[in-house]
Length: 70
Image (tube, rainbow, N blue to C red; front, side, top):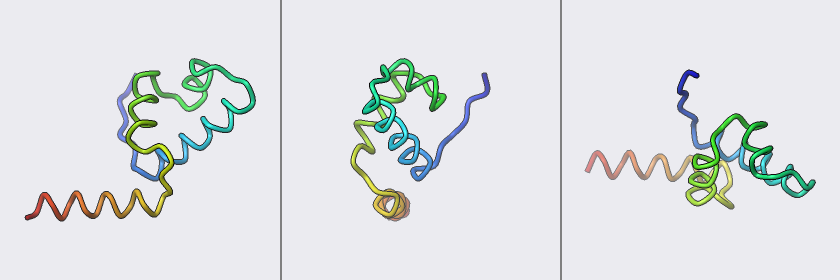
C-alpha cells in the first residue's frame, strides 16, 4: 500500500467523519477501515488534532513553519 501524507485539513475532516461513525455505533476498527488509516495513526491523530477546527490547524502549520525558520 502506498504511503500518503495528509494535510491538517484532511486529517481533521477524517476525524470528524470518524466521530460521526463512532456515534452511530461503529467500532474503531471499522472506522479506521472507512477513513483508510491504521488504528495507531487514528489514535495519534486524535491525540494531536482532536477537537481542532480546520482554521486552527492551518494556523498551527504556519506557526511551525515560522518556528523552524527562526
